[in-house]
Image 1 (cartoon, rainbow, N blue to C red):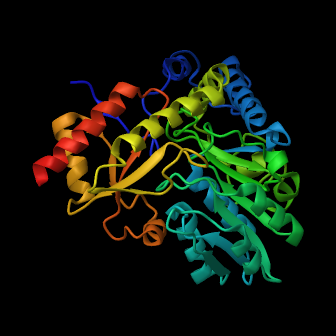
Image 2 (image 1 turned 30 degrees about the vertical axis):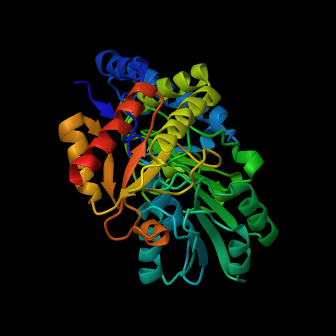
Length: 386
């Protein structure tokens, strides 16, 4: 029996073959670190880094190539931003649908740096009312930190409205695109984002250990480096260089991962985000329509495919999500994720705390046949439990 993978909200799988080939080519034929030598292989490694920045600049419509900063994942990107930007007395607004990658560093800064934190409650479907953001603005509000889409309900947040509010009030917007980069069209300039955090291993279809930031010119000047060290540039000085991207990229980068990410962005461009998104949403619609009439199943979040990504969370009456995931995996080779999905506040918001939900997240390489098989497997498991 073939494995059916429905956990793309955690990590997309499988990867395009070209991603694997690019990483193998780096290991076999390049291997060197960028900026750490003047020989050919080091120069070629540096070329990989630059070309990937250029591709991501185009994908996100970033200000300049050097405004793309590489990190190991979106969690590191968010931590670099928050720790380098916030000071004692600053007020931050976020929402109850955030991942722990946002909540935990903010709670840390609240406790140890005395920032002020307001968490806006979303509704039972994970939907944010932008007016609640506007009402929460204070004189000392410095930052709005917001997920682009929930990793629990799949709900897409009203970024355009929030961006208008932040501009009207002269505050900064940090957007967590972990669930949307590579799925939605994201125009950094048009949306008027100040800090965009992304990860490479989800909808961008790249490998783990890749991610980064897109910074506005103003933020790039004021943001303080969180990590200091070797850059291969200005080695004669004992302080971190103050120019981009070296200002924020201390240490040897994950060049093999970035090589894979570069090829993944090529794949996305060739396939087209619209084609990818439409396929994933068709699977989402098929799944929702296939289970919506089953009495014991409750879908948490929107029941349509408008303003959502291809993530669906469900619960089944009197059956633990972890048990359902175990049965799907062991009896049907269907891989899904149960639990809190690193977002406890989101589950409190939608009423599924502390056990969480059973999450299905569909990817570009999933098929209608796989979704149909999963629906039948769910029905059979429920019937067996009656």
